[in-house]
Length: 201
Image (cartoon, rainbow, N blue to C red):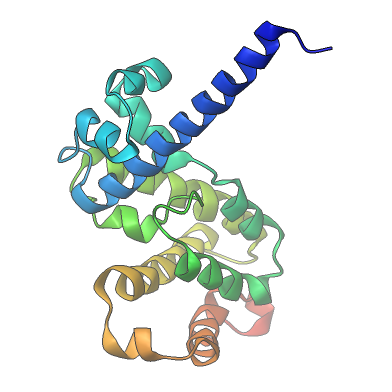
């Protein structure tokens, strides 16, 4: 049987989880728009609708807040890279990056972070994520020479497309139907993902 103290603690726990998520979502959106240097903990707290002191209570510092915001929920993207058949990988990644929102709670979009890449903190996060997800995980799945380079070229392709589509809004790219876009991107990536026996060299 729940005690009175249990009944009090449970809402507090839920509030803490919700507040932490609100701070991470706000930090993610503001970082993508203004960069780390251009965003204060007060800005984040205001956007999240909470007191600034909660930033330090839950994260300890501005740097830890932004690092965690950028790293939140990357497992899904890593699983796509590790488990999706290579001939379907680019389509899966494209669907993910074009369907995400910077404030959706999904993992932080590299294209959104790229707009704030004048900050060394953001550059380091982007570099680590690409090298971990593509340079390590994807490269291990590729046969033949220059596997890490080929994997990072796939990352450059996906990131560039997402940046133009979501942040710049170029006409032809945003106006293309998904099947057409998917077909062209798959054909571009195929030589990078194919084994040497398949004639990519």
